[in-house]
Amino acid sequence: MEITSLQSVRFFGLWDQPRRVLVWEDITAKCYSWRRLRDEILLSAQELQRIQPSAEEWVHRGALQMRDLPDMTCFPVNPFVHLHADLAEVWSMGWSADVLKNLGVTYDQLRAKGMNVDVMRHFGFTLSQWLNMGMRDSHVESLTEAECQHVLELPRAEVLGIMASYQF
Image (tube, rainbow, N blue to C red; front, top):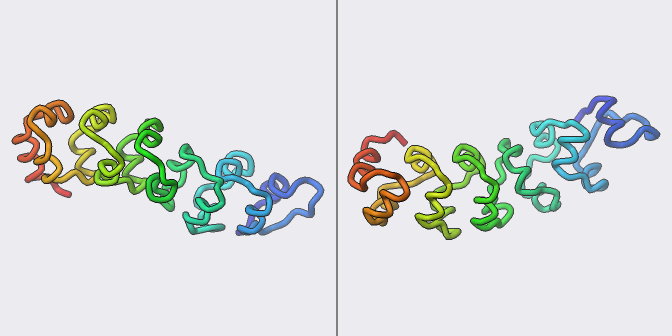
């Protein structure tokens, strides 16, 4: 990818001839992380995606941290699929339902990682946010009336009625 003189100096140093092109091999040779490239070299997420369009390659390098993922929605990098994160790690990030959805996280993935009604309540998402993440009738039907009230603060029959008219 073509870079500016300032980006060249920031990446390659002052004494190296200013280079006009930055390639993936330059990044891997210097072991630069996503965060360092964004914060110090001031490359955009889209520029970094042009240099290396494979999310797996970014993960493989080990240069990603959980906190980087919301900045990588151009890929996206799913914390469960790509980083093999557990539910506690994802929960601790405090990400909104929109961020999780943009990262490709689904309701079923959260359930597979151990999410229960108490954890759902702590996420604090609305019914529409859960629906956007993939919650379906079968999920609600598996909840007791008390669990439905605890998590969604609505009677189970009302939630199912809402879902019947919801546009997915």
